[in-house]
Amino acid sequence: MMSEHTSRSPLKAAIITVTPFQQNCTLIWDEATKVGAVVDPGGDLDRIEAAISETGITIEKILLTHGHIDHAGGADELRDLLRVKIEGPHRADAILLDGLERQGLEYGIEDARNVKPDRWLDDGDEVTVAGHIFAVFHCPGHSPGSVVLFNRAQKFALVGDVLFKGSIGRTDFPYGDHEALINAIKTKLLPLGDDIAFICGHGPTGKFGDERKTNPFLV
Image (cartoon, rainbow, N blue to C red; front, side):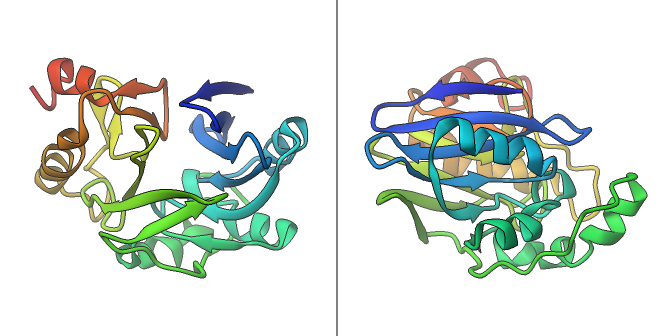
């Protein structure tokens, strides 16, 4: 299933629901050049490849927000298929990325592969997609190395499982930290502005302002 979300032209985004965890794998691309990136290819690569073909875009890189299997399980294979590089997450998630094959077997996912990114991301770094700049915010808590990618020009963020519409990422997994997650959301994300739109790792899109006012974990 693919649904489209438009921030502000010329960047566009499409969400492909993948894996038994119903994870939001996201394509983002420049509307003029049709060059873009795949964010969090957790699996179901046939669906992702079909969406790339449907949109007619050329993928220049893969971006990972964190190292859980539903977000990163298909990244290594897709890197080989597309012949591109992987950027992110923060190095603190190396322990998760090194265990994807084992984690996959635990969940009955047989084709997951361990991942070593071509570039780790740190707080304050920048990544580009077709020339569009995204600021990197290290937001640990759901996982030690979770990152949020923020495009200031178009008031748009890719938040992974840090924040959801009406909820936040789980912190009862190994290496989770509830206090760190809440702190990251309140000190790094919400100050960016109420009008910032976000795509999260599961479920519908939202805006930071709505979460600041109504999210039961943040009010």
